[in-house]
Each structure stands twice: as structure tokens, then as C-alpha cells.
Length: 283
Ligand code: ZN
Image 1 (cartoon, rainbow, N blue to C red):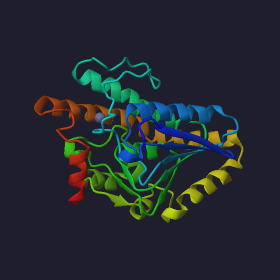
Image 2: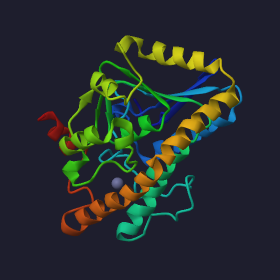
Image 3: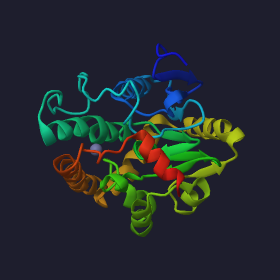
Image 4: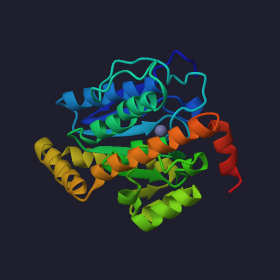
């Protein structure tokens, strides 16, 4: 895998656009370059009238290990043309202002934008779906997982109450969301299925055919009808408090980052990808 390969791949098969995160060497950790490339791909799929359904995939053995907090291509100090909202550029801003502006744009704003894509989206998940990876799967309408998939949000180790897009209680129920976040432990695909967090679990070898088969059957339905079904369910989730919950908890998330930065070495309590991975291995 060379650095010159695109961080997101895009192809159309019949009426399905397949958007693939393509940093397999880093378990598809999301840097801002990938975030904006994903946005471009989703926009392209939304615009193309021949595309009825979008499948989001991860190249290699893992869907996504989360946000990039440790590769050489981590780009949190780089300016990108903003797409999700009108917050000013975070680069060069001091303290919490920088983190708030950046995370409002690349995490909260982008996730909301992608959830509103007016075509059905299917996350096709194998291997790790951790923290920032969870957010990406949750904003898809359906989640189809391989039997080797696992899900975790271990950021309590950083003193942080979950990833930025706080959909945990909606995605898995309030009671289990607390266990999931208190322990930060992995749950496997079968457990996630029992919790109602994912739609289907299939053997790894059948993951792609299952997801693409569902996409093809959905694609036979009228596009406007599909868009209205999606909006109907999303609107009810919002009336039930999903979006206001995310906004209120985003304040707690920023408080945790700021507290870490005030009392310790950095806003992540000195943790990085390696230390988080090593801690998870002791479970
Ligand atoms: Zn954050």
C-alpha cells in the first residue's frame, strides 16, 4: 500500500455506489483527508441519478479503528475547505476554541450531513469498528456485519464520555450504552445484533454478497419513496431526542478534552493509538 493511493475509493455497480475507506495499513483510521474524501464520495453518490443505494466499506481486515490519533498522516493542524457548517477554521486558534471548531466540523457536522444523504446507505463492517468507526456505521441506515466484526468505544480511558457523535443510547439502548462506555470493552457482532444495533451478521466470506444483495433489492424501489422512508425514520429519531442529545453531550465531550489539556499533557490524556490498543488487549 503506497501513500499515493486515494484514501477513499469510489465505484458504481449497477445502481449501488460503493464507497471504500482505503487506509488498510492503519485499519482505516480516519484523518481529515479521509473525512473530506468521504464527503466528496457521498456527495457524488447523492448527485448521480443512476445511484439508488450507497454501501460504505473498509479496505482490508477492518472497517475502521476510529479517528487517526497516531499515524504519520495525522492532519489535525491542516486547513481544509469546510463543508459541514460555517464554523471558522480551527487552525491557529487557541485552546478549546480550536478543538470545538474542528470537531463541530469534521465529526458532528460531517456525521449529520452524511446521515441526511437522501438515499439508503449500508455500512458493511468487518473486523474493528471502534470509536470514530462507530460514528460512521451509525450514520448509515443499515449495518451488515461479518462474524469477525467487533465494536467498542473505549475513550473513557481518556476520561471522555464517548465519541463526538453521541448516538450510543439510541443505537444500543440506555442500559447497555452505560455498560459499553463504562467498560470500554469490545462486543462481537452477535452481541451487537442481539442489542438491535446492527441488522445482520453473516460469515466473513459472505459479507459483500449479503450487503450488495440487500442494496440491489432496495434499489428496485422508487428513489423518492426510499428518500421519504429514510427521512420519516430519521425525523422520528430526532423527535425522540437524538440530535438534541448529541448537541448536549458534545458540551461534555469538549469539557473532557479541555480538562485533560488543563491538568495533563494533552486533550487525549496522553493516550495514543498504541496505548489504546495495548489497553484493549488486556481485556
Ligand atoms: Zn473529541
